Image 1 (tube, one colour):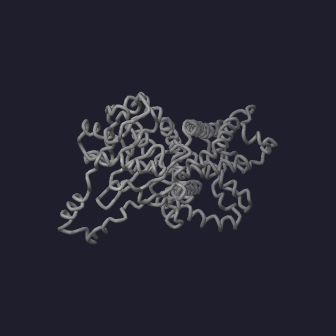
Image 2: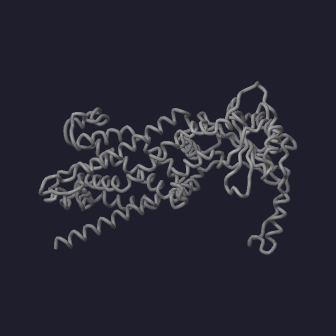
Length: 485
């Protein structure tokens, strides 16, 4: 995808177009794409480079976890029969009596440990996970986890999402995801639609670089042809990354609300449970502490034996594979047993179990998810590299490496296009002509401006950065005119 496309317009003595010629035509659209692709490539490419560089090691977190935490995660299979969960939980609680029992995750395979998850106030949103041998109830170790992720995976995830800078850092990844599809689409249009030479008319000319070319043309060939191969993966990463970003993700949530595309919620209340006590609208005022104390008193203490009852009921209901068992939040709620098989074909059924009766009281099936909810869930798993196992990881790694190379070649073209003659001194190649918007056909201009405004609202950081580019471009134009005058 070419970051810099040579122009046929008249050039100034410095070697770069000054102002775009007047006259509206379809060539104005191409000229505008050239300028937009150039500036996006120069200023946004560092964000893409960092996102690819930090995402590359994240794709191999399953292997990294096994390398670092294999003693906790893996066991030797000593038979076909595993011990009841109650015995495994008792062993975990004997070794780690601190905190409260949050949930239990069954082993993913015959050589994996059972995970007993504990909640501790000092850990905040993180948990302490105790790993137990399902055959001997031996405690293999414990780790501080974040929604099931090991410390190494959590660290790499934070690095990729926010560079360990918190909410402020998340803006970098959202800027990258917001512009990635724009840069990829613009590059595709410019490369496939170029009109010079017969080579452009063949599929080989689009998919493969011209190895006989030299200089900037050779670099552009590798840059653009690689971009074509990466395009589908880049669009996928951009779309899925935006779904859980901060600002664009909020807009996406509003779309799901309007389209009723959220995943159905599991009804966790037991059928014969009493109605919940209404809370005061002001939060309880001076009695808020007493209300909180009463609610805490209503929260039952999880009986390890009930884990076996809930698991047995869920297995009878057809929930196979990995399941997460969560105790009731209060006396009016049931046990939640949810499948968490992320590898295709995925299994995400969940049930509510009345442990006193050993019965399933409600259920949500993966087949009941709306299409948008399914696509969102599968997209996230694919983005994380777990949907298709090692194949998913390899594809993501290749896309990340390809994006790093495309970014490098883009900057190399910028450097190669710098003026080198005595009367055209310069350290870098100059930008394409200004004023290309004046070449746009009126229908394109009339439709395009509202479309760009709507796009800026949908993707706020794309809109803000694009507005910044426009303001900077206007200021540069004013300065140049003042110098000329």
